[in-house]
Length: 499
Image 1 (cartoon, helix red, strand yellow):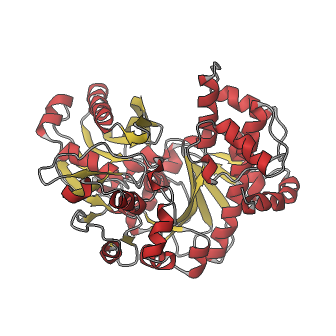
Image 2 (tube, one colour; image 1 turned 120 degrees about the vertical axis):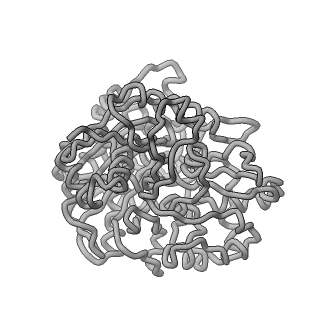
Image 3 (tube, rainbow, N blue to C red; image 1 turned 180 degrees about the horizontal axis):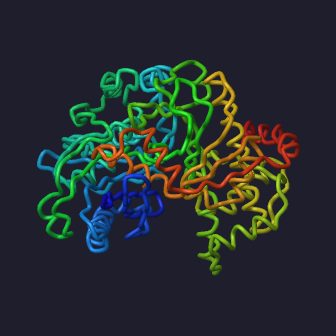
């Protein structure tokens, strides 16, 4: 049997990549054919995405895939981060550059929203955790600012929907990314139009909801001719990158109502939760600020967003701007040389959303909370990683409380699995074995969803079995758990500190 080639365009908040998956019927091999830097662009004190630059990279990567793969690329699909969007007018003109979710226009917007619709009612209709970057608050920021774009918008497309439209001309809203907006009803599986109407926001801009695995059709003729991919179809993966990453979790137990494993999709963000069949919209999940996001196969990802390696990435950026030239191995060495469990931060405190100087923000937090202030770069990094691991422990307890059973194993997937110190710290802090891998989980989940859509793989559980057979996992056993147990109450006090 000749290999089948499927192409994932996996766009993260800091980088993007085109990854080809070659599937021989038993195992899948990955080949990265193109990579590019991604990130916000600041103009006039606002943060935007350079969507036309991203589109240029997408086309360049398509050409690279067609040039390097010695077989027909059967299909391609795009996954990105959630919450952000573009607007088209009635002539399909893009209305400006999409805003970046870290833009400060949503500061204070949740509080304004709650004055119109109570927090409890928003959660009852959407089941989504409250974060000021959610699409709902971005639209409200536009409304309160009197943005003319809302007046002339004809269609809202989430970022992966926007790129799929650029590829095919087809406009739709894919299920998993639609659920990140905080105006999608996960129980009724439709837009929460009544909620938007209460906010005075337009509902006609919302399109049909389509599921992962949907075949949108061929590439636009101009794109096919430019890239040489004349026989390639466009197939929707789980377009929210976490949905694709969870698709690639190599768990042995199939999804039950209450599974005994949880996942952490670890990158700039850490998304930690469990895969369930129905949303959990209760007073407890509201109190714990958990979210119910769509997964592949109609599942629900009951999870919580945690600030992940953004803390480390920003420290590295600031230090290298100041004249250093540290790579990730340098940072790992500095961290390993510093003692652990000395100081903690709350990784999700607003201070760390978009500071101008992350190392100083970490020091300032410890200073305000009366802790030992990290005096070296290694100490700053150790403080960040220990705090992320402790937050994993905190969220693990919440997951177990919500599903009513003990979680026996933690799967960590994504680029963050390369940070062995954090993987070990997660096992130590949580007192659970950690299985780390695959690294390219998001691209792999994207690819395997395409393989399922093509009929090459029979089901999601079969796809996970293929992933287990194709990629080795690193196992981390808990160590020195007594020290983490002793330090955990101190971390909880930090979470409650008035900073």
